[in-house]
Image 1: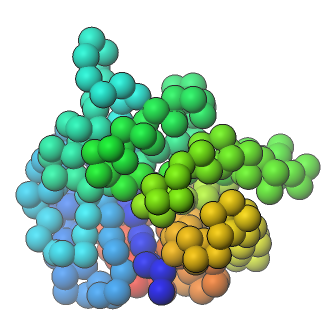
Image 2: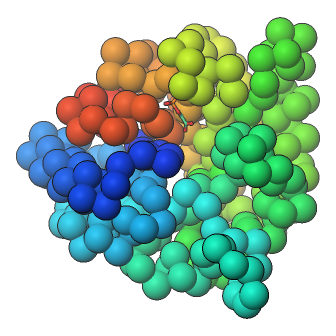
Length: 252
Ligand code: PGA
C-alpha cells in the first residue's frame, strides 16, 4: 500500500512567530482530528525549520525545506546546504518546484546536483514536475512531464528512486484557483506511473507516491484524492490556514 501524503508548501510566507504558531495549530488539529493513516509534511522557510521541528509533537507530521543548495558546502553566500537542512531535524526537501525553475532558473543539471545531495544526507526529496499552460493547451503535457523526469529523477538508481516522492503540479493551476479536473489529474498521474513502470518496473512504480498540486482546497481534495493514482497533495495557499489544511488531510 502506498502512503497517503499531504504536504504543505508555505513558500515565502509567515515570519518566525507566525510560522511557529501555524505549526503548533496544525500539530494540535492533526493530533485531535486528523486521519491517522495520512503522513503530513510541513514545507517551511529555512529560518523556521528548527523551531517547527521542535514544535511538532505528532509522529505522523514531518518537516521539509523548500530547497537546498546544489553544492555540499563552501563559498556560496546565502545558500543553505542539504546537510544543514538535515541537521535541523527536517526529513524532506521540496526540489524542482516550478517557481524555482522559473524565477531562479533551476534546470535539470542543477536539480540533479540537489537531488544527489539531498539523498546523500538522507532527506526525502519531494520532486516537482508539471507543464505550463501552452503545453497543456497543445495537449503535449505527457511528453513534457516525461522529459522533465527523464532528465532528473529517472537518472537515479532504482534504489535511490524508491526514496523519492513525486509531485505533479500543472503550472497553470498553481495559485490560480484553477485546479486540474479529477480526470485530468488521474490521467497524467497514471501516465507518470506508467513511465516509472517502463523505467524501473512495476514493483517500484507501485510504491512511489505521486502527489497532486495546484489550487487544491478542502472542497476539491476529496475528488482529487479518490483517484487511484493520486496519493495526496502538495498544498500552497490552503496550507497557510490550519483548518483548511486539516480539511485537505481529511480528504481521503
Ligand atoms: P497552490 O500552490 O496550492 O497555492 O496552488 C501549490 C504549490 O505551488 O505547491
